[in-house]
View 1 (cartoon, helix red, strand yellow):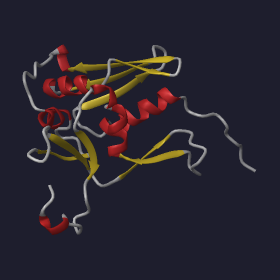
View 2 (tube, helix red, strand yellow; view 1 turned 90 degrees about the vertical axis):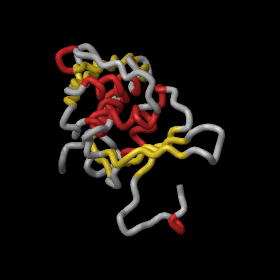
View 3 (tube, one colour; view 1 turned 90 degrees about the horizontal axis):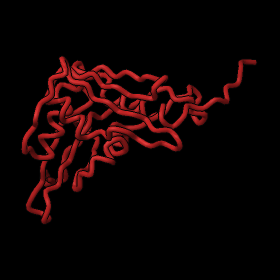
Length: 177
């Protein structure tokens, strides 16, 4: 009989795994977790992308009794001032060239505020997390669920995270949105 593992990943490691799942495949980003200093570092080769991600992620995340520091480090310590940009542009900068990202769409005219739909690729995301509910110890989720959680502190109202449709599925009557 095999060994039974009862140790669970701490919640800050789950957070780190989610950030890694969302940004780890981006060719411009290297995600590194420093366990000794409880710090998550994102090394970003593009200054505009680094500034956008820095806006979206909190500088620190209190998870239980642990404070996880989150640091976005642009290449050559070059920072970019994004100036006055739309929320759509913020996500377009943050996810430029990221293979998990599909598109962002602004919708106005229905309500008093502009609605922004951030759409991710139609894929199941899996990462190891000592999940006892899963035979492989994995968490299986969608990019939209990860984005909703890790960007919750950005304070962006009217932003909705979505999963793209399959190619064979269309919009109802081609009307929405």
